[in-house]
Amino acid sequence: MQVYGIIVRLDMFEGTVSIVRVILTGGGTGGHIYPALSMLEAIKEKYPDSTFLYIGTPNGLEANIVSNYGVDFKTVKVSGIKRSFSFENFKTLYHFVTSISVAKKYIKEFKPDLVIGTGGYVCGPVVYAASKLKIKTIIHEQNSYPGITNKFLARYVDRILICFDEAKKYFPNEKTFLTGNPRASEVVKTLKLGKTSLSLNPHKKTILISGGSRGAKPLNEAVKSIIPLIEKSDFQVVFVTGAVHYDGICEDIKALNNLKNVIIKPFIEEMPKYLTTVDLFVGRAGASTIAEITALGVASILIPSPYVAENHQEFNALSVVKPGGGIMILEKDLTGEYLLEIITNLFSDEQKLTSMKLNAKEQGIPDATCRILSIIDTLVN
Image 1 (spheres, rainbow, N blue to C red):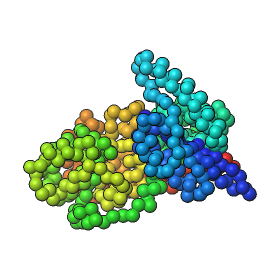
Image 2 (cartoon, rainbow, N blue to C red):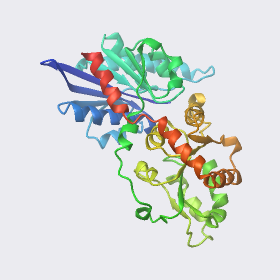
Image 3 (cartoon, rainbow, N blue to C red):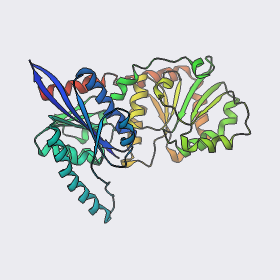
Image 4 (cartoon, one colour):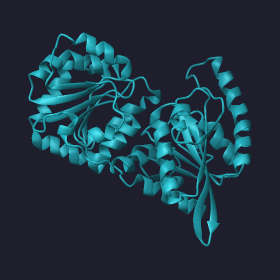
């Protein structure tokens, strides 16, 4: 897991807080970058005079994403910890120590008053350096099972913000607060699209199937195997393959001409616009995905990725499944036939589908951004 964060400077003017300097720090996957940038937008909206700097890794995904926000960018070098004995861990320790020194230099130059980290490796040296410089600090944990860096940082920070009740037991109770993921606050503002705007039949139940921006091969293979059966069904599917799998999927099914129930896309830029339209979501259980489907009240079939650190996607999925907001299929049990059976049974039971949507929405935290900003205000006042 990679990490992201925000360092914020706040000044006092006639009894009110005015955030004037903000540093975001992190690198890795969009699941951590976008919540940090959501916080940036919220802070900018509430405190228009804020200015921003991003601290990331030289080759991380964040370098490309952050450039679209017009934010200055600096780097530190970090690497992940191997969970078994490895000489690579000595290199990791060296990078951590040297990155603390670099982070301290950036922090002293920028003079922030508050640091918010959203979990993972690169956040480690930055948040740790800030705590040693006696700056107020916050970490934000998106997953129900915390990452190794946030567990390490928990003892040093002033506040810990979580997105799942299940995560609370891993942190000191007195400084842990349930705030949710700021992505949830963004998606509830999404305008609902009609099915016709997506070239879909407005009279049919619709499923959005996606394994994420890069796709998930096991899920793609399962769906590909049942496309002929979906074509004979009374529901329709928006099948997002991921860009790296798209051409191969299209080649494999080219004999199936003029599909009427399946729309295949390599990637969807604004997923929430589609989520507002569909009756069921099928896909992975990343933290941002969970925040979005619960905020919107979308029933789901979740197939957690078994390849992520600490198996956190399975824990995320359980937070929706246990209260009846979704169904979980472990990847080892996934087949096209099994998936189709669950979908068919679900669509034949309208009461259960409606109940799942309501239960999912009860788990959502659409006011996550307000909660986070409230914690910031109480900490610095």
